[in-house]
Length: 150
Image (cartoon, rainbow, N blue to C red; front, side, top):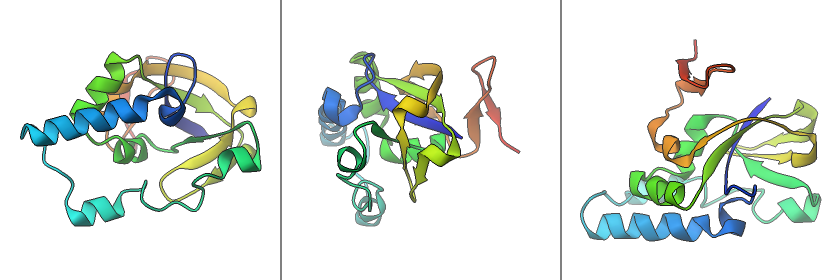
């Protein structure tokens, strides 16, 4: 199963690496400058970060568990802001694509938990690309270019 995860160059996720702060600061600045619209109340309440039954469970369940997304479109739901994605990319954020045995993945509504030790890193892309993808796109295995899913 493919899993996509935003990390820094050392493999730390957004929260552990400080990229979450970088992202949110850029989003707030863009909204305050009128460059981006704030999320509506409906969108904000539907944001996958508001409610997830797996919040805070990763390290408690298994020290090698990491969060990711099964689709690039779900990753984009987490990182919806162009300004935020640019800021994270400037700080070295990447999208790591892993191949993970399905037995090592717990699938949630908008993200997954997976055992990092069982995952094989396939490729990495600048995190800026997060804002350019939709549910209809995935990365081609060899060329690394977006291809439409059928």
